[in-house]
Length: 121
Image (cartoon, rainbow, N blue to C red; front, top):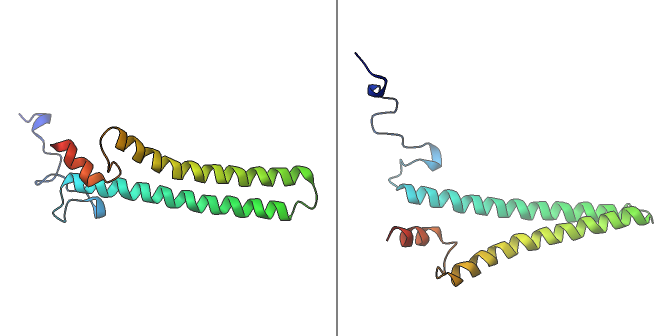
């Protein structure tokens, strides 16, 4: 009588992942995780920069097309101010994380390979 727990669900060697997140290249799981997190942080930073540029351009177009209307001019100024504040928050977040890392004794907190090695020790 076969039991449900005896059925093999995965492949013989276990799951290796797929594509750039896979373990086919001889990398260990911490290296794959490190690449994933650093790529995610980089992608989010690039998206924030692109969003900042779009907001600034939309604000500039709003100022140009306001035609002397104080309400639309104020709306465009607020849009530009919001874009600048958002960009400063993104940049400040990176510096704050570095500062917190230095205060708790991890000087390279954004350097994930070093951080994972320190955690494993």
